[in-house]
Image (tube, rainbow, N blue to C red; front, side, top):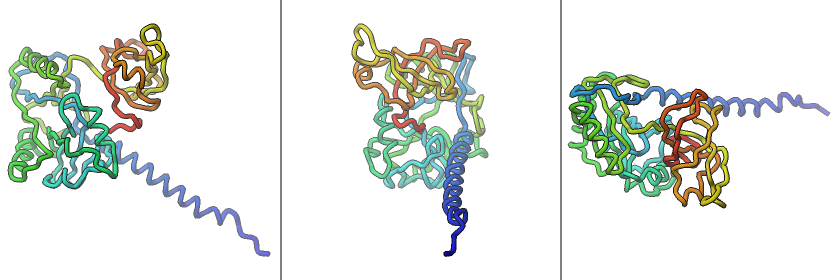
Length: 295
């Protein structure tokens, strides 16, 4: 009887496993590189501003990166977008927000997160605020996008209007108007700025509060009025899973009865951090991702 070397029989399985690991590592590396390749805003810290800055409303949607052939998330993952949605999109890149209107983030997120079927993309639009091109100024990048859609109209894309801000009091007035209407905030971008990868001093996010993300890892039962339902969620900071804290405010009655599931990513607002790294005066804002995957 001829014996077959067991290590030789196992080799095909080892090769397949190695190939699978290579695919997964390459995918994650691509996503990480895609996220760091983007121009991202820093937080506005009440500094003086003037007409050297352009302002626009910060749409409360899902960031999308049109590459010229496909739509990616901020993390570089491909989105399953219906062909009709991007039918008249250009061959050059665009940065924008997939948006269903003020106060519709969760509905928008549920549509964008669905793959292989259209769950309502026709109610969304792509609000364009930039173009990933390092050779042009912000005005040139926006003008190119606007000129394209003037010649190739789309029902599913628009260029977000950008206007000069006068001064700090004008900025605060604009912010109060937007927030009173249910908007999220303002983005400032310096006139003449070029596209730079990473957090840029030429782009500022303006809100009356700071926000961040955490992962749901547990619950604290409610007491008193909240007896029999969720009192607080236990979160770990998405950016540092070693920091764990509780949030018990900001939830509706419906959300206390049916709280975000374990593993979900939620957005919370806060006002600074304690020395321990835990956020101060944190309050629930919304569910960012039920699946635990950032878009």
